[in-house]
Image (cartoon, rainbow, N blue to C red; front, side, top):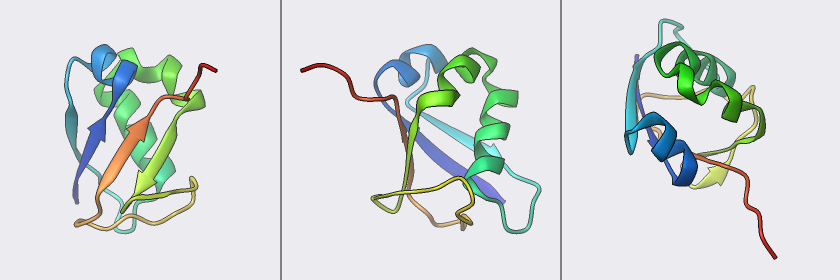
Length: 82
């Protein structure tokens, strides 16, 4: 299954891309499966994967959430500042 992931802020800079298209082998991939595949495809993002926020269809998602081929997936670095 192909999944398109939008990247924002420092993640976009580290990946040198605003989005990634990933081929996930699992029939019902989870957010965790997706994150593991991102690290394989873009090792430069590995250190950032520990503290990211994932949104699926405009709602924050947990690692065990199952993904579908038409899901709108976005990954954000943690928000900081005051």
